[in-house]
Length: 202
Image 1 (cartoon, one colour):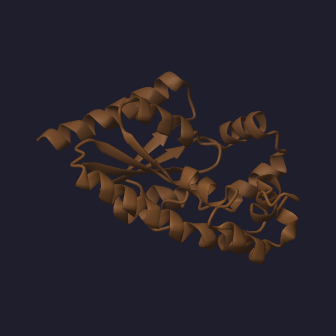
Image 2: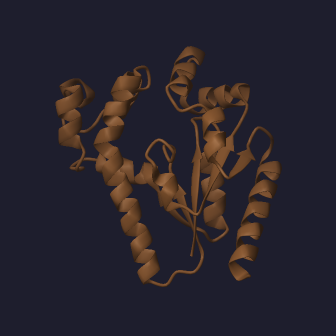
Image 3: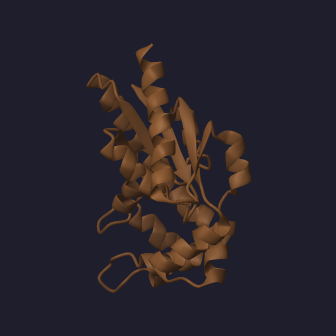
């Protein structure tokens, strides 16, 4: 079993890379999905979120107002850190549990730890190598505007509240540049997968 950490900031297209890796037969351990489950109705993280951020980030039926919470934490580094601390440890534990289950099942393929906060959470130590998805700032902003409808300043605030790409590059083993088209992106991924499979078979 080969474990690869995959990360990338908002708007870099990490989710596109992850989806393609799944198509290629990789098992994906999705930290964002785990986090969403923790904050879904009845999720384990909701009581702590209510204590930390108050009733204002919840709808009347008790459902988390993700958009409102996002507008708070992505514009305040301290509040973002507080939210991460609530969910991070549980996500790390679930990721480790997933790896343990795969080992017990004698899985011999590629496992992707898909985590936007891979380095911030220290989860890179769980992987044998780590891949960083990057893209130019202009491309990232255009993608987020199209996807989320946010204004440019809100996008820059969110980007600036994340670890910058320069720092991530010093921690990554391989960098995937997603500034171009899908064909270019898939070619980069195919080369990385082929290299991993070759190494595993030696």
